[in-house]
Image (cartoon, rainbow, N blue to C red; front, side, top):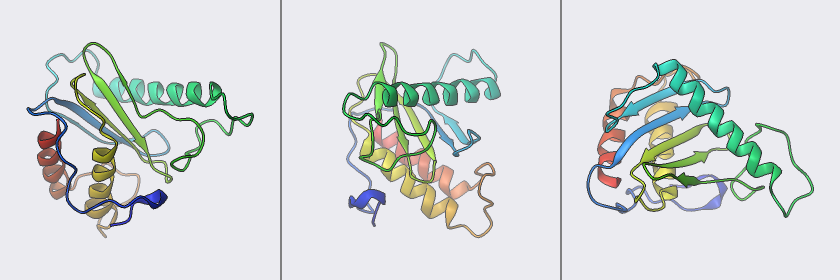
Length: 169
């Protein structure tokens, strides 16, 4: 299967990075900041309602993307704020880690943003995020009953995503 940017992605999932179920949550946003999917597996503390949580996460991503673009020491051109870039274009971030979690992020050229929050000891998840995006394309975007921009309600996608995320983190 071909993934955007020319890198080859095999149909089989990447190998797990650590053992155990250390995935906390996953978000899928469209280019407009609408949360298409939110799943959680290991989040004992709920401090915000879902809508506030989604806004906070999207705002964090927007701010981090803006910061990395403005801090890029190799480019005099700063680009348009909030416009998705192709892989390898400009300066971007893939993850950050705190003492309690690791946030891994991927944005596609179409503006789909996938965020996976895991245990801080989890390794590099870029291949896993690409695999999740391929699941999204196969089970959601290719579904003739799905309307782009609407919340994801595909049971097959959610089940496959749950199984995969539990195996990687």
